[in-house]
Amino acid sequence: MQPLVHFAVPGDLSTLTGGYGYDRRMIVELNALGLDCRPLMLPGGFPEPDEAALARSEDMLAALPDDSLLIVDGLALGTLDNCAQKHAHRLRLVSMCHHPLALESGLSPARAERLRRSEHRALAACRAVIVTSPATREALVQDYAVAADSITVAMPGTDPQPFAPCTGNPPQLLTMATLTPRKGHDVLIDALADIRHLHWSARFVGGNSFDPAWASALQERVKKHGLEQRIAFVGATPTPDTEYRQADLFVLPSRYEGYGMVFAEAIACGLPVVATQVGAAADIVSNDAGILVPVDDAPALSSALAQVLSDDQHRRALQQGARQAAARLPDWKQSASLIVERLLEVRTA
Image (tube, rainbow, N blue to C red; front, side, top):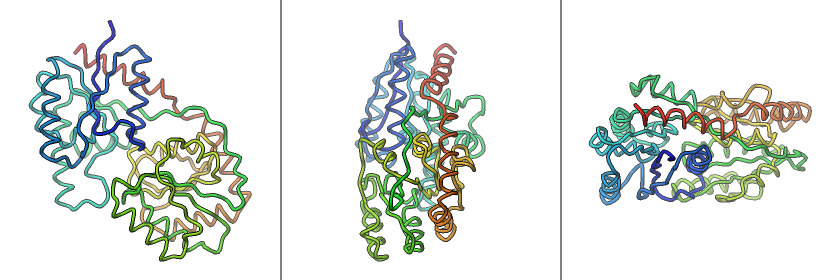
């Protein structure tokens, strides 16, 4: 008999973000490895749920039979601390933590502290925690008092991809991320304005519904710099592979990343990467495959981009480095196997 695992995810599982993409793929992979993994769709609105969403989520968890094995995505778990504490004695709770909620950009200090406290309590109710990078593991150990031996690092996998030819004229820059402050699109726009004299075009792929005001401000920023003809806001896409294959360089100046699946996806397609020295980016982007710059440093970012765009030999060397790095990326089955091992431990403990 297959072990039954409930996987609680807030909102719409088909949402086009890295975190939801990870959850979708892991549900598939866990089933392929012999578990009976069933999505449990919680209401939307997390990590700022209204009272109705909280009440409905609590009812759904309360309805699960005693001793159920339950994974809860951290986007919801971090604010379900009271519910997690209430059911910790009867449910085998496992957190799927993509990154600590309090590290989201744009939060007031008070809001960040409330999230930190609630997530701390929620994590304390879990029997195991799954994270997507060593950087997130370290953050939970150091800042959330999570026992190191209870954490499993299951990095996102990648599927083999045809390498992008990288022959664009002009070179096409690709950034793929939801339009939220944490992703640093504002810094990228300012950096691109500083190298308007160079030959390039840019595509910003990512949904604008998570923070419409911020998305609108970014578009105004592009207009202010007079870059409307060079920077295209594409919106979310169900076919990201097409975007990678048409690009020549991937760039994303995030203010924080728990992992950053898009970096691995870009490298899997053989794209050179320009990113920031945050979170797990350094674990993915090696020196021979890209350039890392300080956070919130538009001049450093524009300098790195200019270096790659102005020197064809250097860009080709990074392209070759990315192609070599692609062979070292983990695959989904390997990562899912680590989760299965941990879940079976939790189930039998």
